[in-house]
Image (cartoon, rainbow, N blue to C red; front, side, top):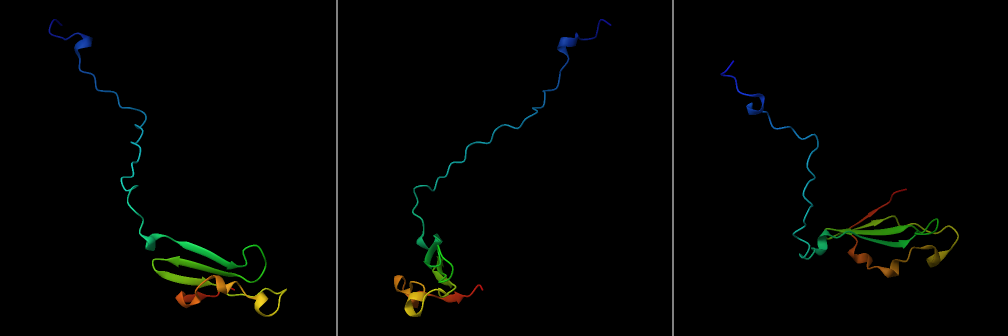
Length: 100
């Protein structure tokens, strides 16, 4: 019994933490870099934003232009029933998608 170490001298394992440490805050190093214009999504409403009919929306992304719908307003006749096409250069539209 004389050869036994006292209890305090016994190596005890390091306790395992019960919670994970908080992650380091994310630091965006690219804040000062300019954004490539082709990475921006542009949405333009040419009609139908607050009404039934005359729906027409333009989506531009990665150098492509998509027109969504090209409807008419049921309460109007002639040019007044059409979306506001004169607000956008329609020659730049790559594709027209009709949703309904």
